[in-house]
Each structure stands twice: as C-alpha cells, then as structure tokens.
Amino acid sequence: MTWGELLKQGQERLKKAGIQEYELDAWYLFEQAFSMSRARYFLDAKEEAAPEAPALKAYENGLERRSGRVPLQHILGTQEFMGMEFFVNAHVLIPRQDTETLVETVLNEQKNRNISVLDMCTGSGCIAVSLKALGGYARVAAADISSEALEVAEKNAGTYPVEFRQSDMFAAFEPGRDMFDVIVSNPPYIPSEVIRGLEPEVRDHEPLGALDGKEDGLYFYRILAEQCGDFLNQGGSVYFETGHDQGAAVKTLLESHGFQDTKVIKDLAGMDRVVRGTWPGQIRK
Ligand SMILES: C[S@@+](CC[C@H](N)C(=O)[O-])C[C@H]1O[C@@H](n2cnc3c(N)ncnc32)[C@H](O)[C@@H]1O
Image (spheres, rainbow, N blue to C red):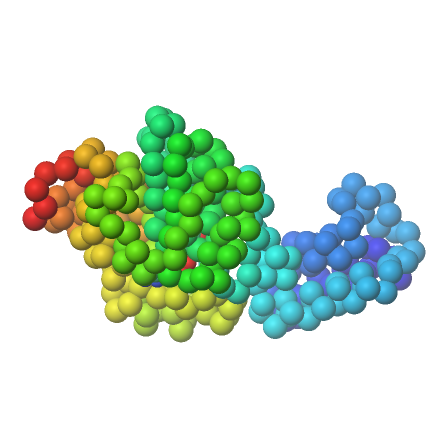
C-alpha cells in the first residue's frame, strides 16, 4: 500500500463514520502519526508506505477515536488560537475561532499596555494568554472554578506571567484589593435545554460546566453585570463573548447595572459575538 492509499483509507473510514470534515481530519491524524509534512506527502504519496509499527498504531487509534466522535483536538492534544498553539484536554473548552473576535476587540480598543486585565472563566487560558502575548498588558490575571482547567491554562501560559486563581466567579476576589482596568469573559452561555441537541463531539466530550448557561443561557452574564463594577477601576471596561442571539439581552443587563458606552459587536458571519461596556465609577444601582 502507498502513503496515498493509507491516507485515503483513513478518509474513507471517517466518511463512513459520518465525520463531516473527514478529509481534513484524516489528514491531521496522518500528519501527526507519521510526522509527515505536506511537502513530503506530495513527493511520497505514490511510494510504498513503510510506517513504523507504533506510528501505524497511533494512526489507527486516532481514526478509531475520531470515528467514535471524539473531537479531533482531543486526539491531537492541541488547538490553534490567535496564531498560537494551545494544549487542550477533556477538562477545557476547545478554543473557538469565534472567541478570536473577543480578543481582537480588546486588542483594538485597549492600546495602553500599562493596564491590568482579568479573564474570568479562563478555561484553557486562550484569552488571557493571547492578551498577554499579543497585547503585552502589564498585568493579566485569570480565574476559573475548575482546578483541572487551571492546570491546562498554566501549561498554556508557559513563560508568560499570567496570575491564575481558582474562584467561583468573584468569590476569591476582594473589592478594593483586586481591581482591574479591563474584565473579559467568555462564560458558559448555552441554555441547558439546547445542550442535548449539540453535536456529540461537544455534548459528550466537552465539559458541561464550560457550556451550561442554565435556564436561559444568561446566568453568568447576570453575575458578571452585577459584580464586575466592584472589581473595575473608574473608566474600566468589560468585554463578554455572547451567543449569536444574546447580544441585546447582555447589553441591556450591563446598562441596567450602570455600564455606559455599551455596544454589541458582530463577528465575521454577522452574528452577535461580543458585548462591551464602560464602568463610569458612579454609585452602584
Ligand atoms: C465557555 S468556557 C470558556 C473557556 C475559555 N475562556 C475560552 O474562551 O475558550 C467557560 C469556562 O467557565 C468556567 N466556569 C464555569 N462556571 C464557573 C464559575 N462559577 N466560576 C468560574 N469559572 C466558571 C468553566 O470551567 C469553563 O472553563
């Protein structure tokens, strides 16, 4: 069998299992198992394949798991986000391209590097680490309720100095002592009812605690809108990722808690994706 046939065989197997992106997914498994660059593949596709036994086993294992709807990223162990590679496992949400809109919005609006930023609900740390790496902000902190997620986030931070803290929302933060110029968050926002209808890769393999926004999906935005003001310096800003139809509701929530300059920002597909607001520092409602 040639290298080309070996790849094709994997693609056919994933196609049969109903994997939509079967060609690409099989390629990534093939590339990782055989350490095969695209350039080498194009040269060697018609050559007789002579894989090492462990590499062949890894390829077959990967195909087996992907056929069982294990997310590709859990098999490969990584996901690219903002041009960087992030470790992922079953304890963290796989970073989504949608979330790049949140990071890009903060980078575009917050040009002063001398600020402090908190990423609440950090998961893999993808938002906090990319803001530190690309924004160069003086202080970046990040919190999550899950100690397993924080382990992944710390690994992802590598040598970037991000302060991680385990906290149920702001429970481990003290108003007046833990103050920030910017608070960002991509909280769980899927209404509980909707979760059971999601693709098996998400429903069965991503952490429920990273998805479940309770009854109407807005549970965590209510906490954020109510409490962020206690941890923001005067004139500070919040940036939240939202579901595609939650922009107006989250904007209203922020306004009802005294935030100003609120705005819904759409993603490249024209969907609600980010809501921003500014904390005036006035007396809380
Ligand atoms: C939608 S994921 C976002 C992960 C990451 N920030 C991203 O954008 O890919 C939400 C995260 O919120 C965390 N979380 C859930 N409930 C929480 C709570 N009560 N306090 C803090 N973090 C919480 C989950 O553990 C999960 O990591």
